[in-house]
Image 1 (cartoon, rainbow, N blue to C red):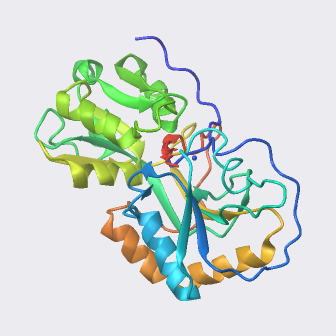
Image 2 (image 1 turned 90 degrees about the vertical axis):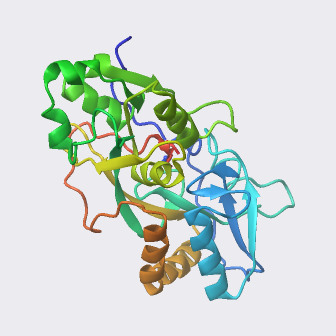
Length: 306
């Protein structure tokens, strides 16, 4: 296999997940307009985060916040690829209003919009079939302690230029990597579905994906049970990231209102995340690593996949 490229700073997901937009917009005045709806910018096909039917965990949190504000939910959809923010949150025709006011899941340091305080922190995971060669693997250390010939014979799916590809490189496993593109040009091709298909067919033996995607794969697996093992950040590889919500630059009053909702409803947010099996880490800032790579499409599409 061709050597995976060195990790770059792609997107969101993260997803989740970081190529959400183009160049940063100039600040706009925040006049805190009266809101008639809780208007969400989202991808219509990006489970477990969002979908057109409102079945993702970001959809559930948006519904929670809308109910708290006594507003209906309205959505403006666009595939979460390059220029997502520019074509949703910052999209404005002359004489028209913005089509939506909030993105429900972005990295806490994402620079293409104004992020709120984080509302969860998760990590990448290793996902694999429960009944095959890795059945006795319960941790990343167990995985890396496998005999070298066993490791060398594995096919490990990773999204190129993601923490997964950096991890393989660090542990001399690049030749075991099966690279996926950070973002597919096909809006109907969801990262979780691509990985699930290849795990089910045996095209890969394991995959490194953003935690919410890994838990979704486990929940949705039909033909065989899957397991996930959380991965911890290490020198040169950052796996854990804090996730916030995002509003337009300059809209500080709206940001503050969302942050109040996050603080007031954190227990209910956590319950939704637990319902979806999202691996949650303590909220403190992660120990940073040199050359760390933010959420890759798998998040993130997460947010990269997202």
